[in-house]
Length: 153
Image (cartoon, rainbow, N blue to C red; front, side, top):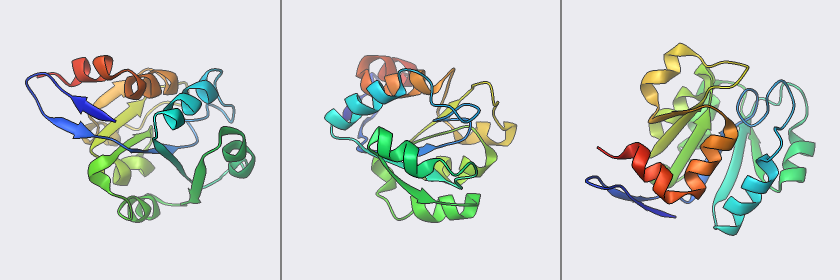
């Protein structure tokens, strides 16, 4: 999808890289409303991929339910390596932890979610936006006007 920021740049995002624990799920549960937003983003032709260490062993079931793919990445370095295999100039990264810094550094747009599992302070300098929840982060990508207003200079 193309985003035109007033008095700023125009860019395209076609891939969304998600973290699992503390981002897509909160305390092991997917918040109500996530599936509908994932479905909408898929309709809008976004590729959605989850990078996860699969700590709770739920990635297979979760990704099958949401209709997204995932890559097992146990460390920040592994996440960064997988991120660099993508066209990062067209990627958005959404996460909450220090392990996500490698995706944040390379993504065109980085969003930190501040949910009940918290955020890691060292990740803040690497993000463009801090959103109160995964629902709000996904909504920003769906609603061009909200995202562009947030990025406006």
